[in-house]
Image: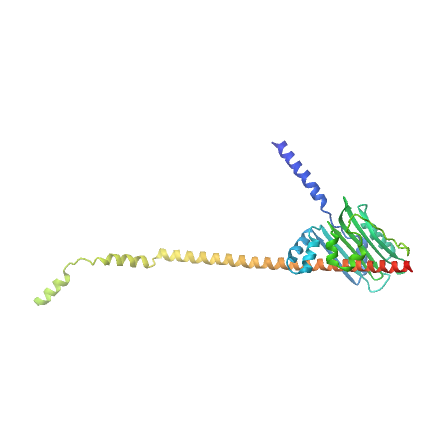
Length: 194
Length: 107
């Protein structure tokens, strides 16, 4: 009898494991983010897990066209992690800090989609996608401006068409060619790498 | 005097009760609240008040729960919209940079 129960528990665990493994976890804020937050004049820190997204999704149901489009985008996502640091003046972060920040998120499962560097201004943008069996399972954006640093991490199945619908024109240029979802492009400008 | 005696005898004479009397008395007894029925009445009143209090409390609790869910839902919605606004801003910035660099490369 005990053997049967043990076998049953083992089977249940074996079945549940892949389902649990598929749900990506949102990262803990890195130490660099804390340093940036301490210097920033305006900070937006948004961490939305699967449950909160489901709550927002339910709340958006049938309100208006925009909410419906947003609902369609966030449904099924595992989480959204956004950090935005605005500074009063330039030079509040170092190139090293930005590089550390990039490395913190740039793990082997992420593929660069678009990359842009401007050595003159110090501006840079990185867009990376997480591909699992050719399917987009996450989107990462690191945008660095002289007075602003933005980190966007979207985990889960990101459908570019839904993203285009919600975000509009901006995504059409920056994420051009991603509808195929498995075509990875790297646009590294001659103007230099940071 | 004889008249008086005769009248008295007539008055004291045993007569059968009217047939409807018993029914009337029983009906009256049924209608009149006795001490037991008073207790039942109070019990019923107390039970009704308790039920009303429970239902009222439940309604207040439910109302609070609905309001709280609505507040959380609206807060989550606002956070999603802020996150998307920042995403849009970041992608827009990248788009502008790519366009500027493309133009610079073409020149």
